[in-house]
Image 1 (spheres, rainbow, N blue to C red):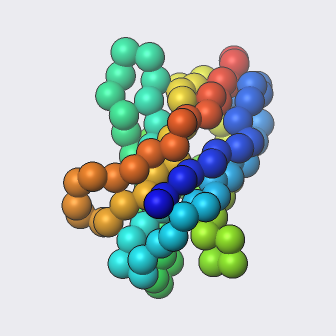
Image 2 (cartoon, rainbow, N blue to C red):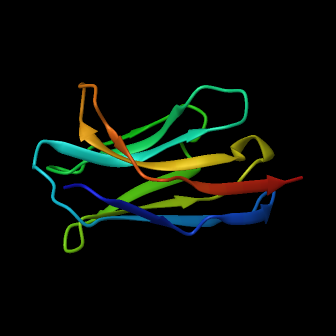
Length: 118
């Protein structure tokens, strides 16, 4: 059973950095992926970044590409999201996600708040 535990959120000033982590205490399959989505108040959930478990191919949302970096830790079935040059528009609840690329039915963690003030 997949259980996703997020950590590392908080409040920062614009231009600062944060690092999010997510540990999957269940299992993963080689053809699956883990990553992050986010949802701001009044907006739909959007892709932040995902990484394919086999091979490590990464995919980023256009709003974060070049500022955020996703990485994986095979020993712990965990992913990290390094967020640099944060902007107020990055303020959202960030959800760790696990699923199969190109397929519905992704699982999400409880969510963690990131707040960026100007």
